[in-house]
Length: 405
Image (tube, rainbow, N blue to C red; front, top):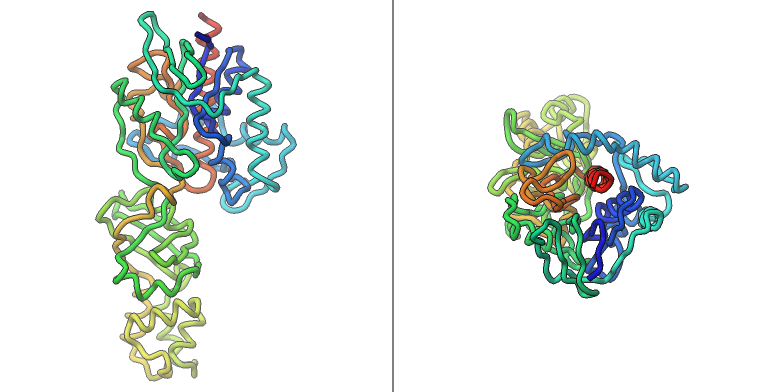
């Protein structure tokens, strides 16, 4: 039986960072992961350049049944703190859009940085290594049956991530462990995920696959309304792009989307006003304001003749056409599921965890960090920032308990 001061299960963003910090805090740490490759989700993130944080990350950018839960960890380990760490390792980066920070070179740089932080803390890493069972010891602490032998520890950190992208090793191990130790689970579902539509209903738009444009998308109404101004991408099966990924986290089943395909224009007025001066056909005038393929498909959908001179079009038809672009309502039939989702919404309920330490309120010495917890960020580096912040809160708490033991 080998003994460690802390065992971290899951060598993704949160697990690697927590293990490194805990090791540097004086603990003898074991880091375990069942996957043969290290930190695959970091490796494929941000198109291979890892959108490792967002300069503007704050509580308003996160979803949870308890939205205030993330405040403490995010305040005590900010995006600026992680940026300083990245800079200390000599990693060049750039801001791409709305505070989103990416490596200039490769996501591998972030992985190497986290490995170096673990090495600085003397962390032992077993990978690939599976955990067959976890038992609570009578006097406190835990015993783990692993494929590399039994292990005991007073502190067990679950950093096993969520369910997206099963082909790179996503697992429900952490959720099953939480349930076994009587923690509540907020039902997991795909988030930051493309939306799909009934094939027959989507047939008129399938030919637009690959087309991208800036839109305003929203769901809900009144105080519950959520909206984003981002790019939309048409696909063969439905809609994707940042606008849809963002709104997918807020949409519930049976809830329609509201789309404004030209948020900077007032087409219902502009088309009518253009009649007095334009000699163009309706199709040409319309296509001057929208992408050509979208304009053609939209006129066909509206049953209007693209070849008709604009001057001969009825004002009512032009107003109706313009409003239809600004007020497109459509009902998704589903989404692309875990295969295409970027993160998981839901997870271990925050009501069973301390917001200060991420330690279980039900079982002392058990911690949950990162994506396995019911805290989900927006698209754009926010979920990585939650990984770093929750890992830091956990590591500091373990170091404090170790020092006072």
